Length: 449
View 1: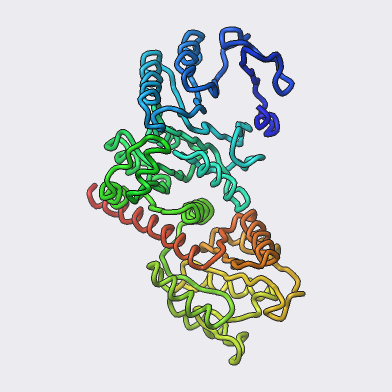
View 2 (view 1 turned 45 degrees about the vertical axis):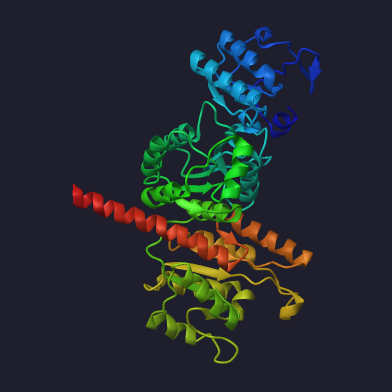
């Protein structure tokens, strides 16, 4: 109740409790039948043994949309828990109830301030999220809000006893406000229907799928978490391969893929221009990109001629990767370099490694040009995909705080930003592979027609 009130929810809220008169300043009703109107949705958080009777009462008053927050069902592994969940399914099917859960955090929609969980205030955007873990789904909304990506709708489905991930995938496929769909699943019921939907949806909207329980130990943990059976990993591998769903394996990889596919225009190819400082960085960054399947090509003759006019022979290196410390101090010069990348026909994607000013690099008092740079890149967002890395790893709390601030500034300008080149390269590989597959599919379909 407090979350709804703090989040600014504008609809009417009815607390129901037989033992209270007032909660959070609102009049309390003893039961559903006492309400002055039929609500749009009920959020149920009574002990598990009382949930079936609540569902029966919902059906009697014509309330069909229900979220069961309560845990204590089949995920417990007990006979009582399994029977209670079977009752939920039976009542819902018989009465035509649409139930989220049980054992899930339910719906999240920042545009109408329906934010009983997740980031508050929520950031409204174009992402749809379907999660079988409340904690993981909530964490994603917190992560990405500060990095330029908002959520249109999210749902934490828990045990998914009535409405499963496939139902919500179908719903989000038809939602015009949603452009990218991120999923965290531990199990799925209707395998064939899920496969067909992912194949269809992924042609129009990227589907980024993190499957929990890939290992034997993880599968056992999934069974005790939501009561679902993870299924053979070979089947899931086939699903990724045949549907083109983007396969991620961690919160960081999930988040990075979401940001990249939400914020960038489609790439023409996988040829990357690495812009930064430090010879060793250039070497290692090139290796990382190549190992992820990206290319780091030589720049065109015209680009090299123009770079040689500004890059000194000593202490720097004109080329790709570009080693030129001046880009950290001179926003106008960085803009010139980026323009060269935008004009160069041998480049498809630009990655800028943004150094954090500090004493170790002898310019801790350097003026911060992040805002100016962000404005320039934002104005060029439709030319070529451009991303930044801001490395602030380590035990220095000041460095970490500065890095987080810089990433937030770039993210809020709509520019994908990552805390390492490793993460940037992996996200860009997912990004390129998605569009490459999409283009090949389009070509194949035209040929068949």
